[in-house]
Picture 1 (tube, one colour):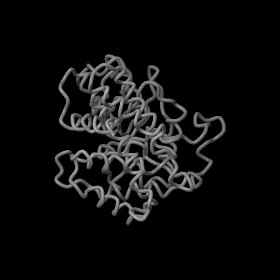
Picture 2: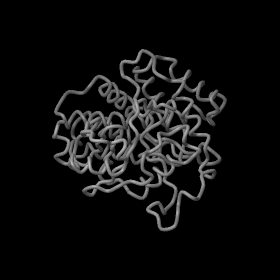
Picture 3: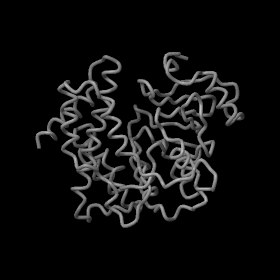
Length: 319
């Protein structure tokens, strides 16, 4: 195992101990395998210990909100939609919050056909669940989980992505992204679309689509919460707009979403174009900022997708 990620993260021995304490039958005597790491101080780290996936959440994660989200993911209404965490509450290690998950198979990057239908079905099922239907037993007195229902974290994620570029304000590529953000509405794609707030994933992409023995599930609940379901659909619109996805992908995806019972009435809703465009533009800014930050952390060139996203930000800033 590469030791570099643990220079600023909890130790390998600490992760092993937690995994074996949380799920000894699954963790066994396995070693730590790094699955992903958001480079930079305080970034998230995802490791596998046997059949257990251990996620060290980004620095600044609020334990109370993470606990609420883990309990949401274990709610019976969400069992057919979300990957169920091994433990109902997060653990703490070296000042960082840690959660535990069963190991599942992500979508293979080389897959010939992306599972658009499965993704549309899962998002439709998630968006059909209004917050009011979730039981108050998620908030037991005296629990770490006391507090309000969390809002979806997409806006916080947008701001975090831009904060990661601080100190590079004079870089022309960074300036293009910042100007594009300034051109967005103050709170893009916030829950104005539904008469009753629903649950949204907050950071959906194909990396969050996981295959289990029970079928496909959505993973990563860091941004799960009440909000506007258009946000979850905006990334598809964003990547089709910059040419990463084939023309017509969005229309097909939205049609499957609606046929699966998704509450957004596309294309009959007259506000579709405005709301979807708003969400898509916010996704372009967030993805461009994330790609720029990763490029600068590695001192490498921009990958082609990030370059396209930065160009899209330039065009947005000129509108």
